[in-house]
Length: 395
Image 1 (cartoon, rainbow, N blue to C red):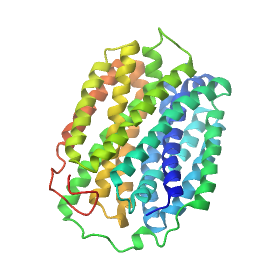
Image 2: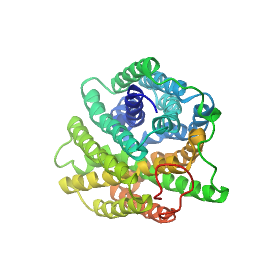
Image 3: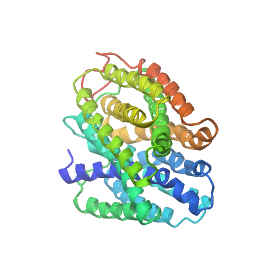
Image 4: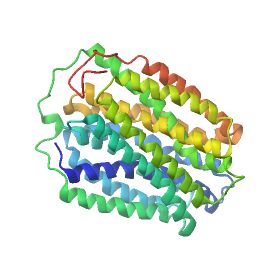
């Protein structure tokens, strides 16, 4: 089991990971103005590389995490994220921005296949650990909205990258000083349990990957468009970027608490039942939000993020339940590479989709994706179908 400082820094690392990925989406209007681009939607496709490399980089990151060690990979993560943020802040054109964001995405890809397996190894309550980690990660999403809004307003968009970059570097120093030492790389340790049947694990991995892909599509569609969507639906009330950022940050902060509830339930109840309940609610609130404006939309946006954030812990929980620690980083890396690379399509589509059809159409598209997620989750094993050692006997 890892020590307390390692737990704290791994959770902070999750916040950094998500925050850095969304600074651009929050500051895109200001960046577009400085670059001489008339509409923010036309600049959004240049952010696709950050999410594409965020996915593709997961495979080598996972392999290095299992074979070289998770501790050294996390040190690379913290320092790499800081350096990449400085590089983004120095961009002077859309092309330079795309290249710098690709570098940022590459370092960001380290966290999920390395940091989360490191966090749950030996944990007595993995579901709760995943829930807390998800909460902190989504507080990073909230921080992106709040901090970026204020930094852009008072210091400019470049400082919105520089300040978090410094924070990441400091965390890297602390991690190198205080993180638990590894006796051996995970792949060099003896497997803790017998391998489940190949057909069963292949089916489960397919379900996990498909569910992660649709969930990632929704996560990217929402988090990369929420700021501009709220500004559009609230334009009769306020256009202050700092105020809109604060309101969106409150949505993220409150919605993040859902992961604590979900994490606790995962340790005690059927994973499939809880997952389907969350996604069922998601379908309903997305359809309702497509027709709303003002404060009613704001309330529904909160519920949308409650269901999107609430769905995040499930794929990690399945990984802990069904995959031995000696290979979790590699399996997680493959799953993430497929799901995140595919979901980067959402980032490319947001700008053109909203420009041509508006935010209501985007919300209907998201509702359709949510229905697909519900169908996929229904194929999960039911109670009593245990495929290997993990967080409990309930599937």
